[in-house]
Amino acid sequence: AAPTPQATLRRYALTYVNWRAAGLPTREHQLASMAVGAARLEAQQTTASQSTLAMLEANHVQNSGVVLTIGRGQGPVHGFWVIVTQETTTGLGPYAGLPTTPHVTLARTIRTSHRWVVTEWRPQS
Image 1 (cartoon, rainbow, N blue to C red):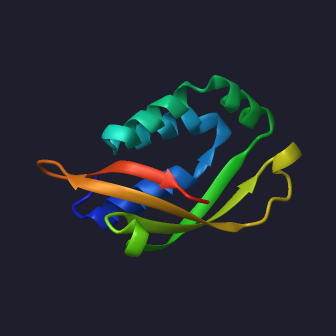
Image 2 (tube, rainbow, N blue to C red):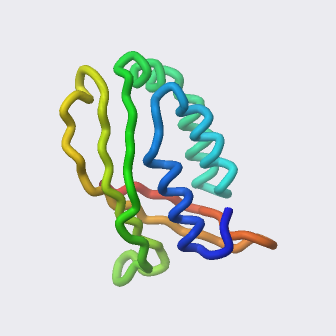
């Protein structure tokens, strides 16, 4: 994935927040390749959810975002990284007119033999 935890988390976050419904299966495979453990399982399970994908595709949903900050968690989230993104979701039906909003995710990483990978990815908002 990347040579530092922060770089890995930035890459993962940008992959996680920037998508179009028609490309979600590919995007989830990309996320799974950057993760191990619970984060990998979550990405693989999301790929398998075809009913959700069909609804997103029917409404032409897409999401775009940027990473605002990545920092070490303190207090009750000690041991996690805190990632804040700013995201915009667009589409038809219930997705029309949604405001741009910040999102917070808690994550963990580990170093493998030659790279950092995501082990947990817990969106909070």
